[in-house]
Image (cartoon, rainbow over all chains, first blue to last red; front, top):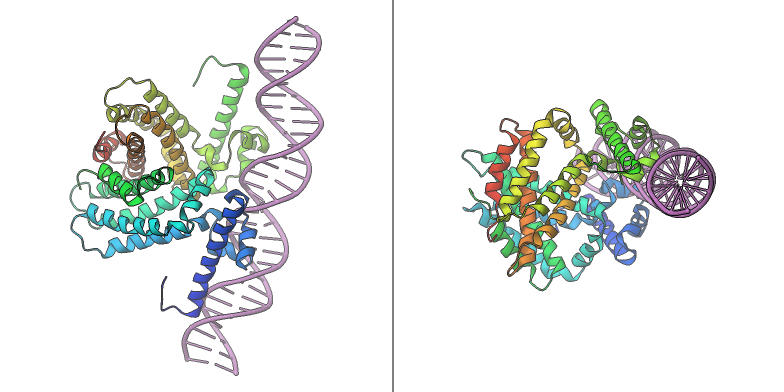
Length: 195
Length: 195
DNA sequence: CCCAAACTTGCACTTCCGGCAAGTTTGCAC
DNA sequence: GTGCAAACTTGCCGGAAGTGCAAGTTTGGG
């Protein structure tokens, strides 16, 4: 992922990744509800206490990759000089979703379906999205001007996240249309007025 | 709230309400994080075990009233014969928000501000909203026809919930504009195309 | 080579949450 | 009203989550 890091940082990355992969693998084997932190830690070769040093709770580990992608999306937006904000956003999102769509073979869909039923996981998934939404809203706010700028920035961020969330969700239930196409359709529908 | 119920049902309602009120009161006194299930149960005069019979977790109790209002909103929609769906939805929401706005004096805002910081509560709040969104999407789906009906129904429900969530959130941070007015503004911005 | 800072780990403690079984209350039919 | 079945409450138990603390271990830099 990143380069130019000291041994210490690389080890941390590796531990995080090991925990993530162990968690996903175990969830695939026995179902997400039957995976304890102890089991994940053991499978990753660290202590339970170390797990909680890396992730605040069991759910968080499952969204490690998503959160990482989202952070990259935020970074991408930050650098895009772009004129029309909605276009910049949806463009960056399309890249991201296309990537996710491409390596969906590995575990992403499986994982999603696994976590699908559990309402507890649902809560944390959405919480993860919402955390990003806030970050995004801040980012957007610095680009929006005029009356009611902050409100409009928030609506913008919320609409955008709604598009992402809804299209992924729908695509998981109806994989006959490709994820990028689904997103394009949804994004066109929810594009907020007054941008 | 409801009428025409047997003693058993009325007692259950009363217990739920007592737990809810105890929870809110305690949270106001010592902060939401310092309230244990035991304390709530004791304050409501039941056993801890009874608490968990009524609410799946500590967070749920705080959203009891919100969930109740949302269920009423769904019911209202179900009965409205209404022509334009977005109008029906926003109309019902306005009624609801106006009511909430009116008796915001009691505890609602206080409560919201209390729970505001805690990310754990955030997750559950959004989970509550999302549960309603699904119910709503089902309700809406039965009214939407034509190509891509289900996707459009979902986008509709999601946009609507986004409007509710965003306006409440914004209003809590910026109470200078009234909640109903804020909602009207946001609803106009996020109204989805292709309805 | 050595030291300080960073990281890991075990331990203790609180809290959450669900199963189970015994006790209590409610609804209902007679 | 009496009695019974179903529903509800409660205490007890155990597994698991999550967090502070104080050792031990590893890393980076002088």
